[in-house]
Length: 436
Image 1 (cartoon, helix red, strand yellow):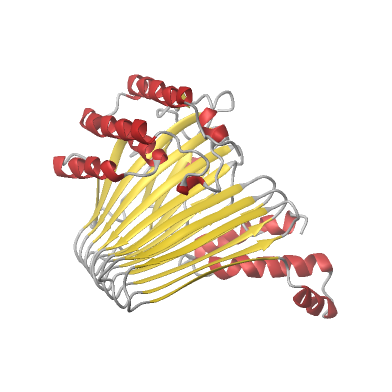
Image 2 (cartoon, helix red, strand yellow):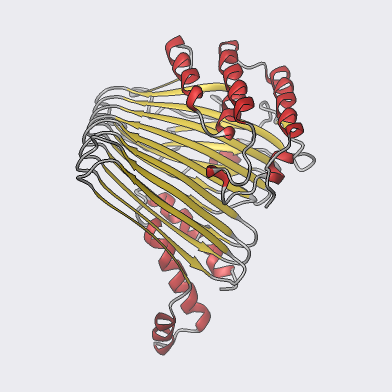
């Protein structure tokens, strides 16, 4: 890994690319102040060196040096392709983002129109708030996502609304085999007091050759509950970066699970602030990697109020030359007494050439808390293998059974049976075809 991830010329290439983006897409003029603020912050931060806190385990040199073009936001995608990625039960409650831009003609909202409002960001106060947040933005790729968004969509759930069906958000990329293309999506969720909402997000590509760079904000009001499942299923020759920010008020709940199939480079950046008493956060993740696939998780959880709870559990199955990393810190601020937090990362290594990095961390500035963290890296247990073989199972089938069981314990926590079934047929299917 080189000492620097980018040269100034590569930073200039992204600034030049932004000019082409403005010319090609002619984004909403109301967003130009956001673009300018994001580009200013991007120039201030610059691409980080390899020893930067956020990129200790991630080599983005090939990504930032790629000669990106601007994706065609008007590219048509057949409806049957869209339908093949919509989960059962979400046929009339799906938002489709094609190449980073919300596409109303491909989206179907009949089942949620009465309780959910979807619009472009038009309120000046909202825009000013997003711009102000860039002053403290520490992720250079999140800055780029704000600078290259053609529109910013706001999803509002009214107070006390109980959305009866899951909402699916499909991020689909058409890609380009002749030259890699870059696109960004920007989504803001506003969940009203005592509202209940379930969301499934899926990232897919029609073909390889793209960089999907997304940012989402979740504003969760008092007593509201959100269940979010994210499914990353891009082809291998693609890059997928996402930043998810969560702000939780009193007695709110945010339960999230993500599954990653890996690609050339996948990076999940998750940041949560438990701002008021009684907030609860659950964050689970599972990845199954083979070949040279990579998945990296960077997590920061801020406990800012008393009696809040956060639980994290990540599991990675890594084969061949796959690579995963987890860099997670829980910060318990002064006054956040009676915090309950735990963090666990488990890695199952299936080859001598795979790699897993783990950096769990606690920063505690309160004296009445219950916090734990830990990480494990290991191979298939020989005693379990021996037991299964004495029961008549072949060595290959015994290995498949043990690896499936390892990953499935996280998959089964997902609240959507349709997602669980799909992951069993895709993510876990990789274990049957790998040389375990």
